[in-house]
Length: 298
Ligand SMILES: *Cc1c(COP(=O)(O)O)cnc(C)c1O
Image (cartoon, rainbow, N blue to C red):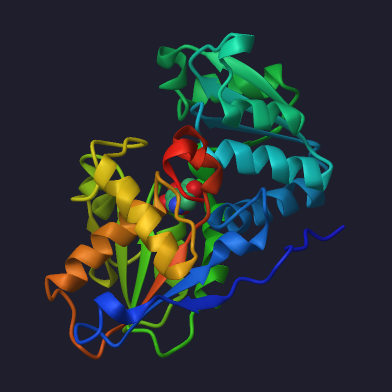
């Protein structure tokens, strides 16, 4: 069985009122359209992991995440669709009543939730601990936090094939940098890739990602974290509602809203040449908006 997208990603032009005279085009690649549960970049990052499981007769995926993780939710849904078992190693312990909507979604998709202390979770790259988990859960495919492995990068490379040649810049939100890495690796050499980190101190990703692709082909910005990863301000919420009114595009609070806010700020400050054509990636993640649902008009 192939894992078929529900809808092909498409490009939507952003309402030009605010960028007219500054740059030539700002558009958005709607990767969020690809699947209502495995949305955006997660679809691409997980695809070859699932394929690996199938071709190697592995029936279970084990991965890691926090209680609000888009990656966990996407993995649970993707495994469910693909007929695989899934195990989520969760940072922190949650009683039944305290399960976040994300964790509940994971469990509803058949994911076995394994709660570990923050100390244990910090060992997520520790070979001894991974060997222990592997044996305990009967040798599953272990996918690192955020889907950050070679199969994730391979899937992300395919996103670059959806980018038409006219674009001079690509803007993408950055968590582990797996998506950005795949894109930089496969997009034309003159395209500048702009990575917006949604957490404090995200600039370190410039070095991390440079292990895989040339540093001169991309730039990481970390000025628009709005208080830190998963945090938001009233100003960001106003921006999200405004963006929805103007474009009919829902942004997610954790990643894409911060990217668009940062990009808009840079464009308005004259950060790009007039001839620039910028493609922003909508990497999905809308499940993360439940926590601010009452503040959003969508
Ligand atoms: C997971 C996620 C990202 C980060 O992707 P990486 O490949 O880890 O950099 C960006 N945007 C959204 C909406 C996400 O859910």
